[in-house]
Amino acid sequence: MCDQGGVQERGDFTSCSSSNIGKLCIFITLHGILFVVSRFAGGRNLLQLLLSFAVGGLLGDVFLHLLPEAWSMALEGGAGTHEAFTQVGLCVLAGIFLFIIVEMMATHGSAGPTNNNTKGNPQNTKEVCGYLNLIANGIDNFTHGLAVAGAFMVSYKTGILTTGAILIHEIPHEVGDFAILLKSGYNTWELTSLPMYTAGIGLMGALFTLFIGTSNVLGGVQVYILSFTAGGFLNIALVTVLPELLQEDRPAQSCAQLLCLLFGTLTMASVALMC
Image (tube, rainbow, N blue to C red; front, side):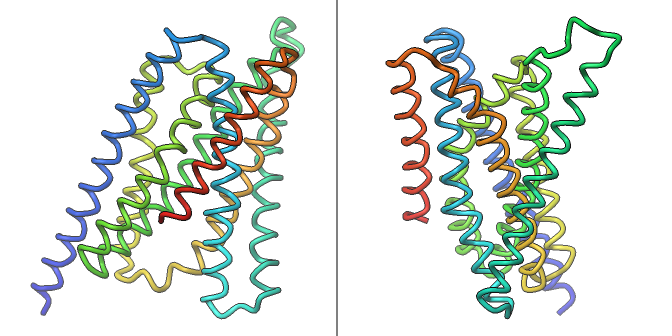
């Protein structure tokens, strides 16, 4: 029995590793294509459209994926309806406020009195935006790792289906992530290498599930992680990225940005309905 358990665990680890490597290859390729397109097909105008898509995608991800899943897990864990909503709401607020505090501290810290040339420079906020996005995506990928490993522990078929659903969900999300990182001043190497780190965090989530030996005890933890991540995404979309997009004074470009925002939300809605 012990040998069979060891073989099963090694099989689960191999399957989880393969799914994360496949996800990493897809996202690196996607980031490379987007970088080439953004450099040679419209410049700043295209970047603004991608950022609009990112805002819509983040909002769709929060309200159509993260929050419904967190509420469902809270209810399945035995919490009452009001208690579940309260738990999720408090974690969302915690994510929003923590990201605001981090952004305020980083912005004021980078605009000290000894460097007057950088004070009030929007680039400071842009850099913070990139860091916050990486933090939120790392947490999100950790929950994906938990889900993939738990699914492979049920059966190989369930693991493949769960991995496919996450990949479909992540592709439009990665388009938005690319736009936010590009806006934050990351270079070509960083844009293609950063998915390696976030995918590595997803592998850590998978290893954590395999170490625990069951996915049943993780539901309560995931409720808080998903809700906190939702708060972080809301802050990035509505506090950090959207205000800059609202400063656009060209009617045609504003309409195009609105359409891209709606398209990002509809894309995530379509993914939610399919998966």
